[in-house]
Image 1 (cartoon, rainbow, N blue to C red):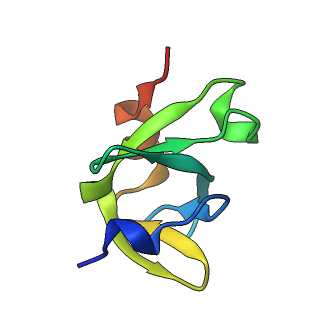
Image 2 (cartoon, one colour; image 1 turned 180 degrees about the vertical axis):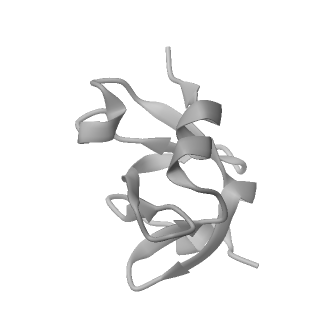
Length: 79
């Protein structure tokens, strides 16, 4: 199980197939990860993904357990 402290600011976030999802801006509480708004996929807006979507952290990347399409359909926009 991946620990929250394994996830660091500016790590790349990739989907289950290794496709780019975003970049970690910072951790928000114990269960959410805020992605940067400057990333091309972000559309100029911060998004939250959930810690339980994380499969593992390796090679300075946060690897999720979902495909990018599902992540983008389910992530939460930050106000």
